[in-house]
Image (tube, rainbow, N blue to C red):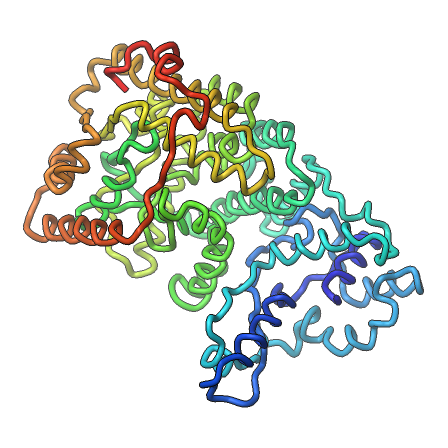
Length: 550
């Protein structure tokens, strides 16, 4: 396989050459195309380009560094010379006529127009079912894994494929990107973010086969931080954006926050962030060329491909997708001060450290990010944001910092019977952990998450006792009311935020509720039990004595 050979050649020489663009094919999917077409008696065509290319990896860093391999990026000519010097010891020996033929398209880019001219309409007409496009990250992972499993027929040093999760490897690409944009690395990635990143990497103990995925998650977030700073550098007017009295929906996970958030988004009275506005942010150059359509459409396809595994794993639990209202997770995640990392990797020590942090710097960056999204939407021709509605259950853990940054915020706090909440959340955590680990300790998840939820409740309630002056900004909602009287509950939130109601708002909410009810009829129920995670009513009572305020 030329992909595996090139991958090994890059690692053998410590050099890599930039693919233009970074797209590839999956041999298994090509075989599926051939099989499905040949078994279709109603096929319309006779000649097919059996191609199902990956979505282009949109990174300004060296793609090898983005995946955790600290190679030096050089020209194809320099890489070729270093590889040929190894003669038969190079995995590319005997393949140079092939690579030289396609180098102007794959590496040097002087014959490529940005995408390969492959016509696939015949395949799309006659291949049923049509396999999904493969992920470039998955192909890199599979190529590496194949070589490591087949050492008996792969006579090259497999040690090259081992990824060592350390700061030097993860920060190499971001440092080069800061130099490219003439940005101060220490400003783009300040000490508090580096500390969070370091603690995450110290705690991760995942199989090496998933390390490219983990490293890519970290480097892509570092890259988004840099792009945001570069955008502010090119468009300083973003700083003048005004964020007025945003709504923050908080409460424990699985208390109806998502349903409420998306109802409010459907009202048209507020604006809610989307997954594609949280992560894999656009480059400043691409914004200047194409704020919408073109490059932005390509970025959305790429974001969709990156999160495809998450979307599919959470289907029926927490449905996600491009264009759908989502949590305002960007600032926490890109600052590496986010509980998501414990959810993914089981980082008990990291979570305990995070519990001691004020997160004030995170909320400063939160406003900066929110200003950018407000400006970006208007630049794309979308309606100007009048009122933001944000939703992240973890805000309840850091209310001091949140209200210091947003003193005029309106808080909506959702509540639900705790035993229903904890079981549902543990099931979601288990679903996420299985993306990285073959064996997941359910009882450990139960212990960890019960402790985490107890602290969230304690902090939220303690803050309210300590600060009675904010009660007028607070609205408490019961899960039963959100489910049984959704339209009235959503209207109550909008009134709490000082927004006027009209028939358009009510119709928008009502249509959303009707659509969700129809969807749920066809979806399997998400089933879970507390006992699956070693949690009992007694353990809940021990962790949270005052259960009436959950």
